[in-house]
Image 1 (tube, rainbow, N blue to C red):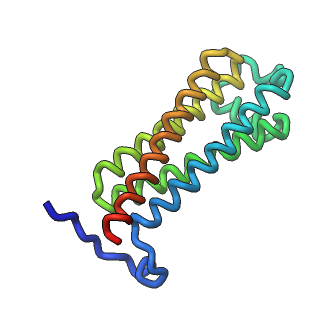
Image 2: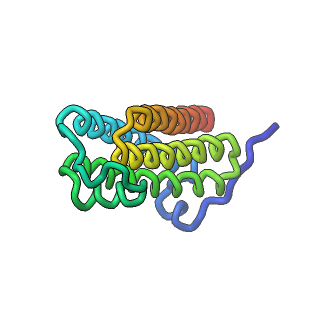
Length: 163
């Protein structure tokens, strides 16, 4: 079975980057950003003694808004970076769909869904302070990291095969 050859977009032709190359770069950046996000989350967990009282019992959307607008600086950065990760993850899933490489699309979609799950769990944690929400955020982070790491590995292998 021969691999599908994709026509490069005019932008890809100008820069010399294939869609797969762009996905590889984006997934590596996602892995690095997720590691930064993980470190910020640990910092908030260890050094923010308590979340502000008004956040306890708040809805996820209200908790996210308060975390960004009124939270301690580390929590605001953590929540804002999480939103950026979700947007980039969505873009990566769309790009993977355009390549028609369904394994990459499945991994990119899994990564995106895991990021959304981590955000929902994180907002729930800010709103309720429940340890289960924090655990859900950590597990969803791990799933997203694994998905983007696999994309980076698989696209690197393809680069080695193509030469």
